[in-house]
Image (cartoon, rainbow, N blue to C red; front, side):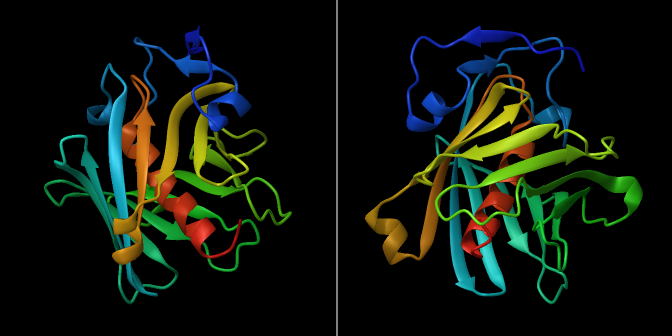
Length: 223
C-alpha cells in the first residue's frame, strides 16, 4: 500500500477531531480495503447504527444509511463459546465473523471472513493498546493478518475523553469518525445509537466491524 494522500482540514469540527491530527484520507488509486472492494465509495459515507440489547447473550446491531435503508446487520451467534458475532450485508449474506478471544488480557478480538474460523480466512485482530484501565477513554490497536510481528499497529482507534466520539487512524491520518447519539428513544428502547463517517475510498464494512468491537469492550467494562 502506497503512502496515502492527505489534505489539511480548515478547522476541527469536534473534540475528537481537535485531539487527532487534522488530516483526512484522500487516496483514489490505492483505497483501504480489508473486508471487500465493494464497500469502497469515492465520497464520505454517513451510516447510522442502532444497538439493541435484548439479553446478556443477545445483542443486535442494525446499520442503515442516511435514508434509513438497511446496509448491514450484526447478530450474536447464540450458544457459541467464546462469544462470536456475525456481520451480514442487507441481503443476509455473512461477511465476517467477530470472535472474542477467551481469557485475553488485552481483550483481543479476531475477525474472519464469512462464518469461518480457519486460519486461512483470518483478516485482522483488535486489542486494547494498554493494560492500564481507563474510565473515560479507550485506545485500540488493529493488526492485519499479514502483520504477524505486530510491532506496529496498522490502524488505531482513539476515543475522546468524554467517550462520545472517536477516530479511526491509519498512521497519523483519519480514515473514519464515530460518535454516540443520545436521545429519549435510545433510553426507552434500551438501544445505543451511533453515527459513522467513513471517508472516501475506505472500506466502510471494516469501519462498522471496528465499532461493534469497540462497543463490546466499552459495554463490558474493559475500557
